[in-house]
Length: 578
Ligand code: BGC
Image (cartoon, rainbow, N blue to C red; front, side, top):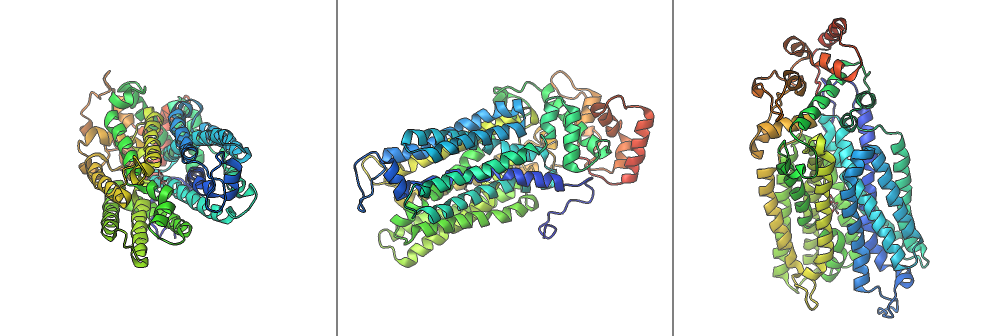
């Protein structure tokens, strides 16, 4: 099956990719917390037992159940986004200080404290504290999971692994919709305490599992811990730490990091104005994340039930489960297409599909006006599902993949945290502002279904944004992405990029204070990714030899290099760049 889907490890990749894939899949379950926590509250707010416990006003609905005031429900919903925004921002200093793995454990810890507050709450202030803390945890998880995955994945399956994170988000959303339906009729507080408490089981499993996971080799290199990085990579690639392919990969990461640092510092200011091309890369990540929200997905996720009910669709709760199911199932094709088509093509095809669906929904509902029939409602639901298919198969996962790849190691955590925060900011804005744009009360814009014209327009803008700004990052290592930004001027030419630098070679030949090598970079020898090991040995000052120098102690003797040379010669065509 895996082979049929094109997920077979290329023959020339040394070692095994299985450990990295297992670790990546396990860490992806962090997405469950994200999806479930954002999805569960809508159903809970409607539950009778919840309203009896938390309502403070004397207003009753037609069934005599106390009402939660609009101002209360909007703060209960929105406080999570405030927490996620803060969590995403805080994740960077923590991930650069504690490491990716420990900071993920810490985030899950904060999330769990928030979940416990929510389960125990019997008044709105305690519930708010719980939702804020859970939000901080989810926001941090939303940065660190893709960061962790991309930093330890082999390049041939890196995009697919990060996509599994989005798959987990959608499964979390789906689980929330189903569990709410199952418990909402319970008369006691168990109706809302069960869905709130269930998240703790995933959180505990994730935190315990993470205790056994390795730290990412790239973080360890960033911290100057070459030996620990070698051990981590050896576990992930199932290769001995003396294996030439492993030594080579580490040496290239190390040399690349030294090169990045030689171009300038790694402060927050640098993610806007620093080198190599950090401003352009940060802008790409932030706008991509914002556009992901502006495609309108969360209008459907958060207000779908209400929208369908107002449109006259019977059983809007069931429709909401169906849309969540479509969202989850449609993510699966992306796991394959993200590598086969690459990021740019997938995003552009997704944008075209989403804009067509959104504009058709807008035109259709505007023309139908109030004269909707069962058939027209079914058509509406079908178009919403078509939109969701395109979102889930493209922009849903790919945005996380691209933002986990385009930044250089020196500022990766910072830039990812800023771009993810922009996603949460828009998420909050849309969640909070949509009722005012769609509603017909005093002061509201009364756009109704015409709001789909707005989402459709942003989908069209996104086609141009991807064409002009998003570089193709599939098939190349995270280090080679630096070279691509340095050598390719226009995003639309990036799909044709072939890596040719060796950062070790650049380091060996020396670079100036500005970080720019003194040699003509285009004249450098091809890297190992394009040549056989034998060629590399014959034509360069031995990458393997430098790797040994960098990662093991006192082992640069000629006899060692020549034995490495023999091993490399026997290995034939091995791809050393991950
Ligand atoms: C988005 C969320 C959205 C979810 C839907 C994620 O990629 O960031 O805002 O709710 O996809 O599946």
